[in-house]
Picture 1: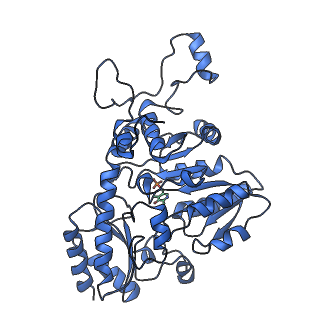
Picture 2: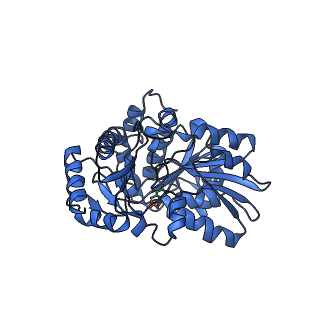
Picture 3: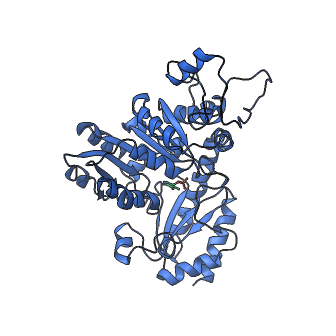
Length: 392
Ligand SMILES: *Cc1c(COP(=O)(O)O)cnc(C)c1O
């Protein structure tokens, strides 16, 4: 563990040892392999008796710096950088689940995680049950003899529902299950699932960790013991992060705290504005006083996060018109960027689901999701305000 007490200091000061060039910021190790000093060292490295770099599919200094830092921030022992968030989600599940195993997973889950669970795993004899994030009593009921892992995302996308991490941690412990939490929406600045007993903490680093819409990346973190299986699968299947992206993401973590403070401050102000707007049916934001699980949000999250969802009155057509009327806010599938981004799940990401299935995960026709960026909040509100009026 780091010698530094505070999150921000660890984020800034966890770094690779300086080379003889005396650089202040780590160089990019654009190398596919590393040279052995002698036959004995090569043997020891391959036998894993000695720690060190062999080949960038296994490890690379830039990715190591990124992961070391993220481990410090999440309170995890070990980790591995992945080429994308989905590589991280897939590897963190596939490393443990075997034919005949059962996965318990929250229903409001990222689209591609849903595809892995429902389309790929069944082909390999891995079964699953979806559980409602808002019905904690159902989780224990759905545990089967062959259940091996619980997987959940909190806050959920796009509904921004949350689940009690302490509850999930205890449930996993009492049934001897692995708990895997996708911590992408919260980031370690707001929430650290390992503290509640998550065995695996997974990230799409593409979102708030990069925070500037530049690179894809991901990470799987856990104890040294748990990570052995993750390292094995990833080393031999190759979802390695490029050193350049590792370098970018490590630099990005240095500013995560200040960026998240501002994202959260802007998001709360926007949520409050929307709550008072009569074109809006409802607003959801974890730190809003009207939030159904405000107490839980305040218990497990430092701030409410950078995402706000609301329902514009007038349904699907109004939702589409609203997006077409935005002048500054981007219309894009990404989130966690410096630039504010709006999405309309019912006509885009979740359009393939039936109306009923969308409602089951809380996606109404007029639901708009805003990833609140780092522009001045007044400009964000002005744009949303004029789009609400123009789409009326
Ligand atoms: C974006 C996202 C992912 C997938 O990450 P990629 O980097 O796009 O592969 C997984 N989970 C959540 C919650 C996400 O938002």
